[in-house]
Image 1 (cartoon, one colour):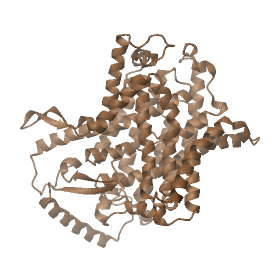
Image 2 (cartoon, rainbow, N blue to C red):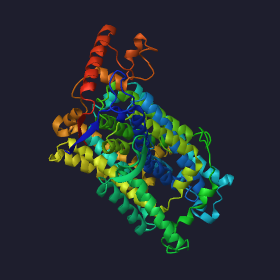
Image 3 (cartoon, rainbow, N blue to C red):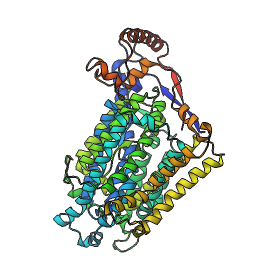
Image 4 (spheres, rainbow, N blue to C red):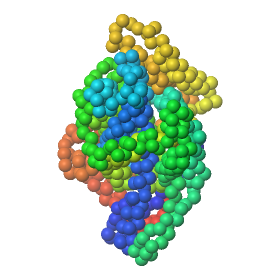
Length: 602
């Protein structure tokens, strides 16, 4: 089991809050504010760019099944929309949800069933949409072709999100987690990314040299140069202009990799090294094949609910997206506990987890209403970034959410991202999907993998999750029942690998005899337990903001709601808060500049 110690600075500089006025300042206030603003900007930009890869990848993958591969302007609108909605959902999660510093964004768990739904014969793209010379992006006929498919996805996401809202705010997620262990989660998350190898191969295969160049840059920056600092000039009162070391390669590996590969493509385009003939291999690596979208896109465009029309609903889409909802919830619960460990916060109590899942459901509802073609979930990549930056601050994430909102409003941002050459995107896909697959497999660390029982469950679940969808997609006529709606539901579910693999893992893990330790349930539960129960600290981190439930709306039945914090009797609570406050004041004055270690197992 991999274990490492994350050193967290226990000072006001990392939390971006002014210290208690009764205590001596560790430095003068102007210097403190300058340092805080600099840290805030760097960390905010780091989280924003870490999430960028996933936010861009989802609309680009969906565009082919939505018949939009030759409409770059609409692709840019989809990218702007998912940025905008992700900003809203992140603000809701940080302020009213689980209240941890965690980014919300599009989820690949929804992508797999969405692709399965759009592969139904009813939603196959007309042949003329595959020919760029026949596509008129502004024609009503073409607009109706892709918007009908988008509205179908929207309706499925909206209905499925209601299930997630119910599971979260009812507290049912705690009951379900009793039966779901690592052997269910591992094949489910693993099969989120494995079926996407075709999309990654298609994009990277446009020019394998450029794709491998992108991969090399990302690997170089994120793995080999992550501990190398770059001196950058900063201005600070007292020190004036000075050089300060910044770990650029560690914070911006994807941005630097994409930028350098993009620049290389531009140079090869200007020098005509890449072929200008559209039928030649490597033509799509040219930067001028997608450059027109920058001039066509508006400077400002505000996404709004129902911008693609009124959503439609079908049973096939709903059941398929429900599989993605369940997978997303399982991943998010793990992200909450990992985020708490890496940010130095106590483990989230049940009410915070329930509220977080419920708010994610609301985020999926908003994503369906706005028409991102996807839902929202907690971003594991940004949770990992907490371990790199060693800064767990809600202020940083709120600033990142505001940056996503602005990125969604400025139309040129989405257009610029939509104009990235295909092989550059393909190289990023190969790295990203490989990491997601490894994250799923890493859940096996909690189990006894010397057990033939566990090896069988995981191996069979993953292999069946690849084999059954492949067979079902080629033999859909053999699955016919005569009822069109039922046929579509069966087709979507059986062609969704994570549903097949996750269901098999769930059934086998709960029916084949095995001890709690062998199944990994003991280690799983132990990793989600805190070392001490400091109710004052838990209350400070996870209670609702702005006095909701304490100063305002503190009614007697409030404590019976699963998503609301449980209150102690008034006198006992006040005594505890006073004692905790005195203890924290003494500790802050004596150990203000100390560092603490958080033992984190991933």
